[in-house]
Length: 130
Picture 1 (cartoon, rainbow, N blue to C red):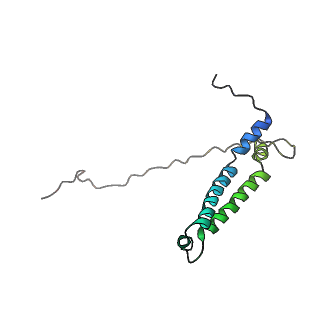
Picture 2: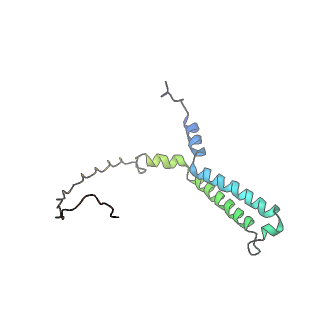
Picture 3: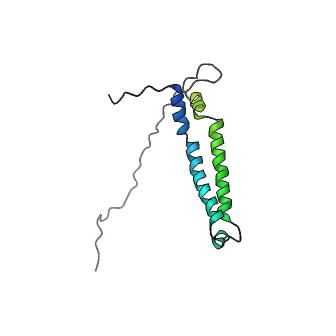
């Protein structure tokens, strides 16, 4: 009974894969941090804002993170994960048959001959001398 899965329509599957796309997750996290930093840059204390050689670094880094957030979301929107997964399942986009996977060549093992070096007989246990 644990193997039973609910029947989902194709639209529901596409929506679920789109929401769990790593690009959207990363873009969202960058966007949250960007909004927080822009807020700190705009509403923060004047002395704290201009600590970095007179540059409001919180504002500029926050804006850069918001731009990165936009890039990730645009990337996820223009190349949906569903389209990438359909191309990765082994089917050729041109309509031809997929190539069979190449067989791995067996590894050849070389046998090494161990040569023992002659050693002088001596004590195997060292003792302390007072």
